[in-house]
Image (tube, rainbow, N blue to C red; front, side, top):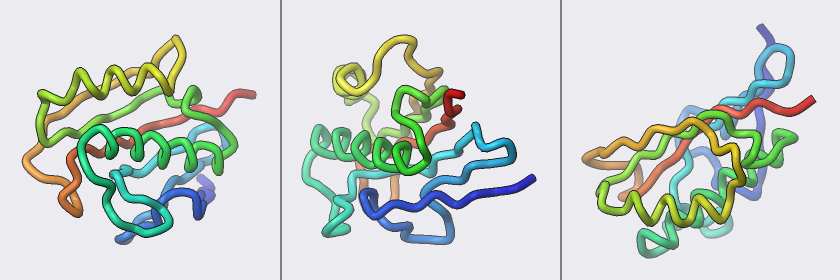
Length: 129
């Protein structure tokens, strides 16, 4: 198996021992690392849950683009929320970033996320031929 590391300055730099994304083998599957609401320029968390959700989608979009795809190439999206009461807001904002068919998805309530984030998302992308 061959691995290609995906990196873009348009998404936050890795703050640990991971890559923003990895493309494997035939080059059509990309694993996107979790993104939180960090502004890629300041590396500071944006304020508020709505702003964080928007920033997470912007960060995922930047990594997807650097991988040769788009958000609509995501086939599986995992959403981690500190407060599941914000799930309706995630749905509303997600609808403005994706078109049908939407990706398979999981929403998981968690106790804490890195850097005090309120939301984190990761995913698997399959690039179109």
